[in-house]
Amino acid sequence: MYVRKKKHLLLGLMMLGLVVFLAACGQGEVTKNSTGIWDRYIVYYFAQAIKGLSFGNSGIGIILFTIIIRIILLPLMHFQNKSMRKTQEMQPKLKALQQKYSSKDPDTKRKLQEEQQRLYDEHGVNPFAGCLPLLVQMPIMMALWQSISRDSSLTAGKFMWLQLGDKDPYYILPILAAIFTFASSKLTSMGQLESNSTTTMMNYMMPAIILFTGINLASGLSLYWVISNAFQVGQTLLINNPFKIRKEREEQEQKARELERALKKAQQPKKKKLKNK
Image (cartoon, rainbow, N blue to C red):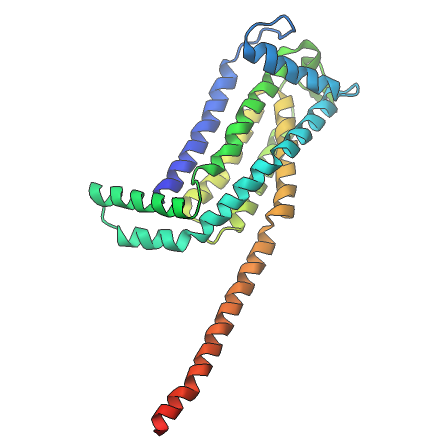
């Protein structure tokens, strides 16, 4: 429980840090003559990649660029899903440890953390592995936002009703981004053995942060979030489908109950024979 709360707190702080960072970024135009690794080799080439994929429309460039990034991140997301499944399978053992070391004194808390870490090591699980995809995506989001806001051709770019360098005047994309973020989080939590107040809070907190950020920043970033999180929803349904996971879990529980009944029936004749003797 301690590790989980720490993980969710870290996720919240990273998103808050993203908002602060983006708000503090410089607005000078980025060109091939820009200096510094970030401006010259990351933001500039992000802008060039988007323009190369635009086919005359910067919005199309952002959509295609986002899909390519998500495909590149697929192995990382698969690793995250496997780690989450392993962590869920460990929950009964983690609960047993929490009951065993339920005292609130410092020594017991330290012992609980040591035992939890030992359990994670035995199962090859890193409790913070779920943060890795977000850590990777954060610089991508930063570079994307800056490439849109600091490249004049992208800033002036239009897509449907949007001026990509400005806020969405109707808040449609920020709302869609928040909805897809919630859907992705909800589907992920549905596949878990159990939910808790912290997980529930994060299911609502993350979409709220996305909505707030999308309302206040360039619509190009909201477009990235919409496509990225829509991709994530589809990926979850295909690779880590919570409905399939629940069905498999129910089938395993049914088999376990049937095995238990079969063992009881097998033991009954033995008991009768012992009574007859």
